Length: 229
Image (cartoon, rainbow, N blue to C red):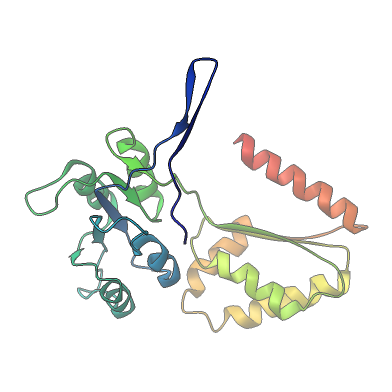
């Protein structure tokens, strides 16, 4: 990770540029169901030149205990503020501040629809990284693809959320059949079997096309429809 630099220049008596200032305090939301440890490292890692940065982590504890992998990650990164709170109330606490949780300048991290909606509502009062929707993946593959790998990629997103979408577009009927078989073989061993099954049933598909150019056109149509929505 490299620190960005401030810059400026003058043209026709107009000063243009940008000023890079580290945020004083950032709140990181860590979802309980799938904490995505690698991403937590990225969000909590102090940036060069940001030694004064304060990081507060909020994580729901449905079983009463914080995920040990989350604890290991934040301790390795030197984070000292960890709060057992999740959902929209965690976002509100970081945005407005409470007696025990001080207000932050920016909230980052994924969450369910309630967390995403809460982040949307507090944007302007506090900065946010983005308003993330359900996970989605679209794969274009021909007969040379490994069916087991394609199925694993689809399941990697389907298990995130019941509203997630996993789509394969291929010009190979044989690959389509192999991937379908692999999905249900691998699905049986997933801890989040119920969530992935709901996603596959409601919002996922394997589309068979005449050729790869047609697959690309369909992919572009899907991307455009998502962008417009």
